[in-house]
Picture 1 (cartoon, rainbow, N blue to C red):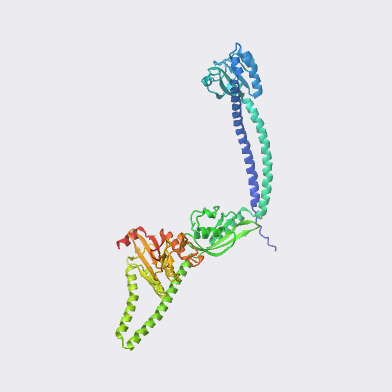
Picture 2: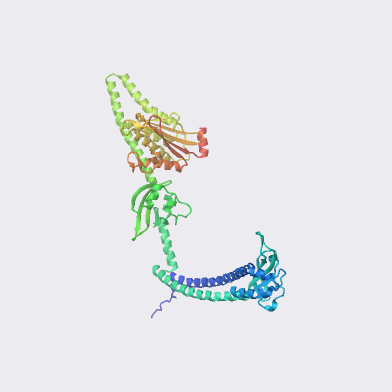
Length: 564
């Protein structure tokens, strides 16, 4: 027995996006053309009325200024001379009537000679007061747009003469309507041509769109866009696409975060040069050549930048990828500190063994007093700094950093001391990692400065010669009464490079390599600015340099620190 197969209604595939747009655009073009035709009719009617008013005004003013008109008004029979003149003017200007009358409104001229001598139908009050005015009024020829102008006798000495007559010219509404009708016929012809041209253009455009969208409908394109957006924003690395003019064409969430622009989504369409990024980072993003694994600083982060220009016979844009190395850089700094501590402990263990052998040898030689004095002196020297740091700096991160850096400096023959006015309980509101970044880099730079190979006498700030001082680094850590944490590192090295200025804090600037290699001071300034602080560098009198960082503490925390 044959089992019939179930039949399901066939679902027709939705019309493609190009087909939907074609139907929509045809309707839209028709509506636009019809609207333009209506607008052209309305505006044409208004413009025709305005043009009629201007023509009538020009006619009345020309007639009123004519010397022959003034002479005819002063004659014994004004109508005999003015009627032929008025009809000639009416035919030449294309107006419907030209009426010349006396100041009381009695007509001297009219297109219908039987109306001569009758009273003018309309207002003449403003004209009698010396003003030219226009109005729409129904007279003997029907509704018309008319203008009335006073006729004055020739004045003397720059004064206007008295009013000796009035001139009125106008165009009937029927004449204006005929003109608008002729214009409307032309507008409809143009509208029909525009509709046909728009339909052809719409068809061609949608045929091309159909090829580019591969016949996909709106649902399929929407789904593809959703996949694209989900993939783009799921990537943690920053992705930035720039067009050929350096404008942002696409940016994902990772790039916004790394560039410090994780706010309103207004980056697309803006030029990279207008984003307020550091100059070196902007230069790298706009460079025409590829960049590989370049380290740059933003407002709060250290990022690794890679760029790849998109070329297709011409500069079409740039693909930029950004990786966050802030945490890695911080961990690397901490690792360097730990490595330094380990090296210092190893060296101290070796040195302690030598001292212990010395003490044992002195005891074996029977010089017990010398052995005790030698051991005590070494213990006092080692314990003095520890006691000073522990008693003055209660912040554990800073205390540990200072002790570790002191051990490292001693291994390099540098004396690291704590200034007498140092003293701080704790530093609320500022992460310990940022304190290590600021103070650790400043101390490292100071130790590098005082252990650099001597170059004889070093020129001072004003050009005077000065002798290099002993290898010593002095650290000041304290909170002042204004609630500001002061970190100051002074050394006895050769001082600041002449003319360095703010270049000291630029990325890749170093006194050893000129350009390329230095990032410590750049990180110091970046960290200080992130907490609303500032960094200053200056030469010391005699020899050496001093770096000072001021970090404002939270208001409540700063008040508590001062009270302590």
